[in-house]
Figure 1 (cartoon, protein in one colour):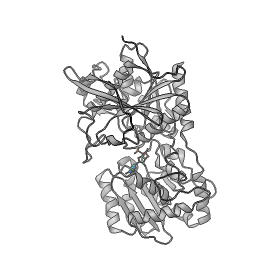
Figure 2 (tube, protein in one colour):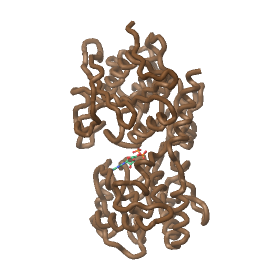
Figure 3 (cartoon, rainbow, N blue to C red):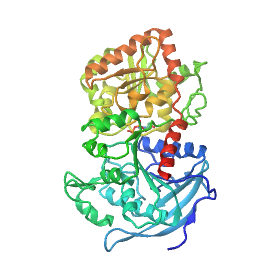
Figure 4 (spheres, rainbow, N blue to C red):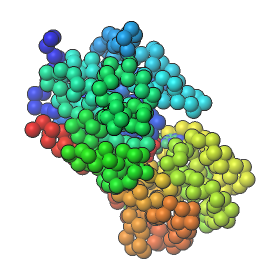
Length: 490
Ligand code: ADP
């Protein structure tokens, strides 16, 4: 066996390979991208050596890639008996973190990350991410890592491969669940291209779930540790068949506990004091800039300034789990309230149609921007008074944490990470408004409560300052991950 290349010079620091299918600012669908950008940096600040490996998607503008970009590997991997697929790996240094981009014409050189432009999942997603993982295995064979940190089902077969391979000293594996609603469930014959054989596929077996393959289940059972992105979500996953999409029993069967580590925020990017995307910076001591941003937001979205109205923002993937169905029966009540809505997002047709319909029927009250727009998302955080996240379930949620820092008061359903990060306002303490029952009525009550407090300017300022004083920086969470890695090295 060829001698492995020690990946970095320092003998003392932990060598971690962070495996992810999204990494901001290069590729982003949701929160995984933010975590993949911020957690490695926070781990590095604590002395660990982290390399991130991620696909080089066609949608990434090559001019935006860091220079120099150096090819460090190329080769082929086999997908099934007679199919070899070629890859190359390009390395770049981004703010001190090495990023390995996996390049493949066949699997990644297309627009879209998981879906095409019409919103249909790519037919070969299973195969694409088996390929990605096989490339990662090649890199792990050539370089020395102590920890492989994998994320969600797209990379959750790696712990399975590593336990089955006769690897001299396989790295320890940590699997983080960012959203258990997606499990890598495919028809069983996909196993033929994994090269893993059929031994784990039988009713109740590690790779079987309701007659389909289930890559996340395999990862949960084979990883050395399993974590998720908030303590609240961890508790719900263990307790609820509905929230865990049926994997609660599998999670309860683990020898080591499922650990919930709250996602942090990269305050270098999300701070009203230094945000260079928003028109005016501001702070808890000097809130004047917030009013400037509010005006710009209304102007940018074509809404008139209406007296005594609050501006409420939504930035989201418009999918079932985000709870927007609760708004459907409330249209008339909501439009009578002193509220103006700025909504940014795309996803399921029924939600896009609902928000578009509102904006057409109530053009002075609702602005809907369909699509993905990072700059507008910053302006909404900075310019809105309130922010709505009525999720059915939420692993962690990031926008409510950004909102806190921007003094944009979150109204959230008390679930998963939303419950962990937003404390209900009680007239003196608290940082936002929570509701518990997943019902339109409970949501409407929370909005009404927020509007009552909004009318009391002094109370609202206290609430804003409480929110802005919250600190969800990555350091604490990165330490919790480091503790897990070190524990595994004992
Ligand atoms: P999820 O990962 O379930 O989508 P999170 O709240 O964890 O939810 O993360 C969502 C991230 O994606 C946030 O950074 C949010 O600002 C961003 N985001 C979602 N939709 C859009 C959009 N339409 N335009 C810009 N950013 C968006």
